Length: 196
Image 1 (cartoon, rainbow, N blue to C red):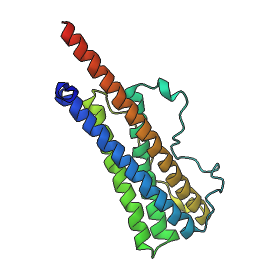
Image 2 (image 1 turned 180 degrees about the vertical axis):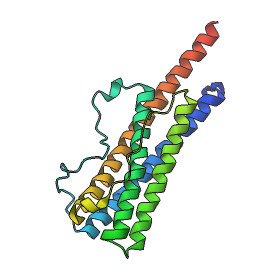
Image 3 (image 1 turned 180 degrees about the horizontal axis):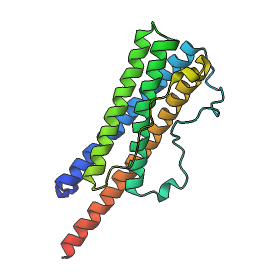
Image 4 (image 1 turned 30 degrees about the vertical axis):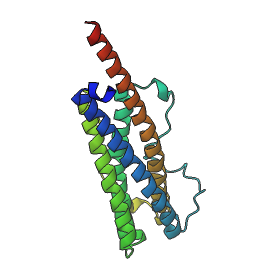
């Protein structure tokens, strides 16, 4: 009965959220496998400190419960825009410097990159459907990898994958919050309409 009362926009919103949650979970699973391959191929220890690596969006957020719907979605979208660029750089460094002959490994990174792009697109659709504008974001110019040593490239790639994994967890949580908020708003709107 409740489903029958939902408006087409509410249903579309719910479907978009569900698809984005599923995709974020798929990315998380694929990144977990990719991380195992990454540390093995690069000869790294998962516990190595990455504090010296900057320029990678961090998923940790203070006062997360106080964020608005637009702030939650906007922060996620900005992060995935950044990860598209970062994964592209990681892929290029692997092809050119670190694992030039490992085409299967490159394909795994490319697959995650494409999924991240798809998730960013879904978040853009969701923001538009809810009437929120796209967040401001300006891509940094492509970095010249020549100033980084091979070891620094390895650490940076590991940081990118680890933070991406953290972001997928945050995204699922944020999207569930947005879904819950929307259901509450929809119930309130229906109640108000019935009173009038």
